[in-house]
Image 1 (cartoon, rainbow, N blue to C red):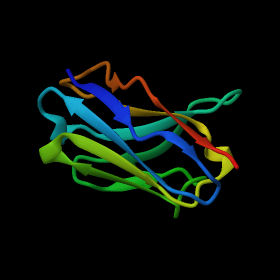
Image 2 (image 1 turned 180 degrees about the vertical axis):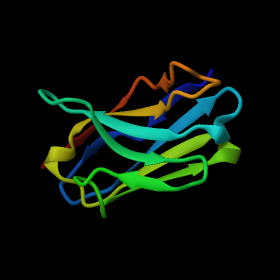
Image 3 (image 1 turned 180 degrees about the horizontal axis):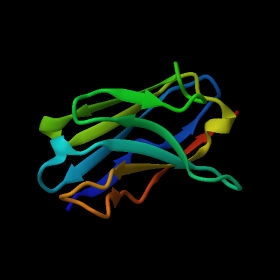
Image 4 (image 1 turned 90 degrees about the vertical axis):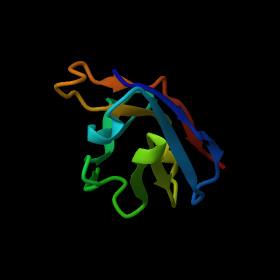
Amino acid sequence: QVQLVESGGGLVYPGGSLRLSCAASGTMFSIYEMRWYRLAPGKQHELVAVIGSDGTSDYADSVKGRFTISRDNAKKSVYLRMNSLKPEDTAVYYCNAAPSPTNPAGSWGPGTQVTVSS
């Protein structure tokens, strides 16, 4: 099973940048598809970005061109670089290891708050 902990959230001005990190414990991190979700007040969970075990990535239309997901398997970590932040990016951001045969329930971190405000 994989345990996840996010870090790097905070308060940033519109147009600013942040880099979120997600550190994983456990084995076989490199085989997991990793995702970043966010949950804003009054809204549903949104899948923001995903990166496969082979490094291929995809993004929600709302963040495409502004956010970049990456991973470092040696460090068992996944990152989300967020540029040109907007107030509507304000949310709690969660790291997720997708369900897999070796981790059927998947794994979630506790989340990190990102607030974009002037």
